[in-house]
Structure formats: C-alpha cells, structure tokens
Length: 380
Image (cartoon, rainbow, N blue to C red; front, side, top):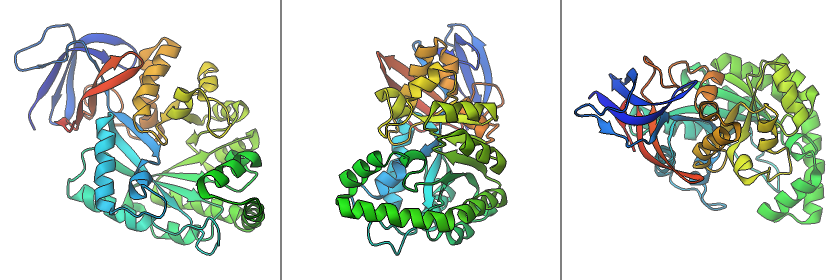
C-alpha cells in the first residue's frame, strides 16, 4: 500500500484543531505534524478540514435501497453496492447496517416477513469479495413485539460478527408511539389505515405485546451476549426504561424520547444517541424531544444519520458550532460511536489507528466531501 501525506490541512484532532499534515503508512496513521509546509509528493489540502472517517451506528438507508417503493424488492447485491457508495460519498467509513429481526407473518394488516439472515449473507459475501468501499458491520434491530424473534435470532451466531443488538418495542402506547395520535397519523399516512383498521391494529399489537415482549426482550439480551455484541436500547421514554436498560447491560441509548430519559441514561452511565435529521430540522418528526434540547443540556453523546446519510457530517459540524468546540462536535460522529461499540482502532486522528480519514470543505451551513480514505486507500 502506497504511503500518502495530506498536507496544509486543518486537522480536527481529539482536543484541538491545528494546521498541519497527516501521513498514512500500511493502512494506519503514521504521523501527525503541525505546520503549513507541503512536502514533495504530498496532497495539498488547501486548508480543508481533515478529520476521522464518520462512524454510523443506526441507518435505515440499506432498507431504502432494498425497497425503494412499497412492494418493490430491488436486486440485493445492486442495492448493497449503491448503499455502500452513497455512504462513502458523504464521508462514512464504517457503518453498522441495521437489519430487523422479528416478523409478523400472520397479521392481516401491516404484516412483514423475515429477511435479515439472507441479507446478512449477501453483505458478508460482498465483504469477502472485497467489493465494498467502506467497513460494513451488522446491527440487529430486535423487534420484541413480534411473532418470530427468538427463531430469527437463533439463525445468527458469533461467527457473523454482529456488532450491535438493539431492543425495539413498537407496541402502541409505548415508547416512540406513546402518543397514539402520532401513531395514527403515521400509519394512516404511510400505509393507508382506516380508522377501524387503526383501532384493530392497536388492540392486536397490545395483546401480542402482553404475551411476548418480556420473553422476547430476554431472548434478545441473551443473543447479544452469545454474539459478543454491544446492546442498545431504543426510544427510552421514562427513567424506569433506563433502569431496565442498565440491568440488561445496555451500552448506549438510541433516540430517547424525553429529557428525563436522557438524563437518566447519563446517571446510569449510558451514552445517548440522537438522530441527525432531528438536530438539523430543529425537532423530532414523531413529536419527541428535540436533539438540540439535549445538546444544550449536555445530554447528547452520539449522532446517527438515521434516514438521511448526508446528515451525519452536517450534524457533527453543526454541533461544533453550537458548542463552539469543533473537536467535540466531530467526536459525536467519530470517537464516541467508536467507543460505544468497542472499535478501539478508529475514530480519531492518532498515530497507530486505522487511516480512515476524510477531507471536507465547508460551504456555509453545508459541507462538501473532497476525499475519503479507508485503511489508507482512497475510495472517494
């Protein structure tokens, strides 16, 4: 692998921003040096920001490529490759591809089937062929209010390299959908539910939740331990949810819905992750707590692009502006997600770490990615 130096760059280091150069060798960061000199053979970054590659823990983007329209199943290899290229283009160098486990095959309205094992096989095969530009790891989103979760979890094992298991409870009246008005608007708008169908849906899902949720949550926690995966909670709404998360061994909380839940997470040593679209739009599309509110309160640790890949970089820069601390803002999309998932070999511009690095030029409130290196190799 050819050595490379990026010079005359604005380097975003863990605690400071300096003008300097960074050298890659053997796929690792070999040296970080202050100064504006451009040595012979170096790439002149013209003062652009150079920072660690972004680390994405929870994205729906692959599902969007697999199903670009309702009832359309796009060829999976093509979809995975397009998803991979899109993430590389916006500066993501490591992604945990989120795959739902737990299905509702017998429900007449809003049913959905199993797909995770087959799709994971295709991701793993493309990774083995060195066909992907960035690092792809697996995140299993365990729907505990489902019919088939234990069986789908049993289809995976430690050999699959599962990085994250998240506990998802979409029972009507709970967590994200505590406000049934928001759920009604969502189901009627996206799936065309009638009032009668919505009422029947609420009764059906609540009855199912009462029967299976406790056992399925325990199965997901056990599966995470068996895989060696990090456990995440989802949509914690009240302190009692966080107490249960701590008991289960949760490392980070995805999208807590209230200030109280986020504060409880910090009290119990659980990192808080929020969605970049929430931050950029100025609020939650589901009516839950605004990411900016948590940022202002010091309760925001990690950012996920959620459903807009390009939002991840924008959010990191935006938080740097809000806090008047660019390294802290960029850490929410680099260092903090790496630490939350045990990736000790990346997430910062430090000698010895992987040369997963991006070059960025700010354009007002937007940003243009001008270079992407993964393991020292240019991919964008």
